[in-house]
Amino acid sequence: MMVKSKMAADRRESNPAFNNRRLKLGTFQTNLDSGCVMSDLDGRLEITWPNTLQLAKYADEMEFEAIVPVARWRGFGGKVNPQGPGFETYTWAAGLGASTGYSGITSTSHVSLNHPIIAAKQSTVIDHISSGRYTLNIVCGWNKPEIDMFGTELLPHDDRYDMAEEWLEIVKRLWTEDEEFDHEGRYYKIQKGYLQPKPIQKPYPALMNAGGSDRGRHFACKNCDMVYLGPRSFEFDAFKAHVDSYRNLAREEYGREIRVWTLACVVQGETEQEAKEFHDYYVNEKGDWGAATNVLDTIGINAKTFPSGVLEGLKSHFIAGWGGYPLIGTKDQIVDGLHTLSRMGLDGVLLSWPRYLDGMKQFRDVTYPLLKQSGLRDMR
Ligand SMILES: Cc1cc2nc3c(=O)[nH]c(=O)nc-3n(C[C@H](O)[C@H](O)[C@H](O)COP(=O)(O)O)c2cc1C
Image (tube, rainbow, N blue to C red; front, top):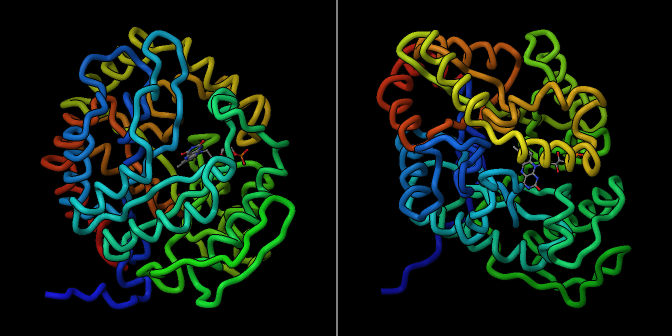
């Protein structure tokens, strides 16, 4: 029997990242060894297909709106080389798209490493596999050792975003134009650009970016649907102002509405004391401070994500969960913390756990029902 591909859909109907839940949820870095954690902790994420798939299934069961990987090509050394072993994000997303039914599926392109025609084509396949649940994360690169590994130049910071503008223009034309086109720009030359079939999502798949620099914020607010920010301060007013600054930039300069997301790390205990002690154990006793130093040094030199002087103070938070907002305490405190993030104006939060498999199972069984009861997962 001939099966026709699914009809073209307005992406707001097929991609849950556009739904109206008061707080959207996702997972972060489940494609990499250790995930968001830099610690010699037993039970941390070991990257195997069954493990990463299990985490995606938990996400799907809770109707998480996003499963977001990180495109990482080599690890950060130190004692346990966190994020060294890991799954490439397009092939990983394709597998997860075929194995889940609700959650949004993301893959990540380094602009300088993925040619726009290949990125547009691979993205289209994942959009078809997932029936329009796909999001493309565009990253400009900052981890110089991995870019060096390709023998490719890490361009000066703001030029990377100029290249990304041109890259994205080509990707969008391939996704939307039926006529073949030529393109000759500063970075790319395309002859008779052609792409069929088109993606399921119309006008094209959801786009995300997490640029934190001034140039990066403009790129994200001008072009992307989901904009992610790494916390600079965990204090309510400062965090809220940070969130507002993205939303206002998108509205005032580009006349656009964006969805603003951040990251948070869940450390849950029977009591607050137990959660705090466990946090202290895996960060201060078992933490891979050498790897964390390598990460922060590289970010400090090659990215402009954080204002000067801020990074060193975030080191323990990078060890705990890649700088995510700390949600440490009992199940009720975790739920309260997620409400706080919502009150800060956030549309969505990517979660991580020190021990992803145990932590996410506990979240599904114990914490998520409370979160639902509290109304935070209601549609607006
Ligand atoms: C949620 C999130 C996901 C990210 N994913 C990646 C990634 O997959 N690969 C990568 O190299 N950088 C990733 N980044 C880093 C940013 O995309 C950005 O490149 C970095 O902050 C440097 O740019 P900036 O100087 O504009 O901040 C991510 C950041 C966040 C907060």
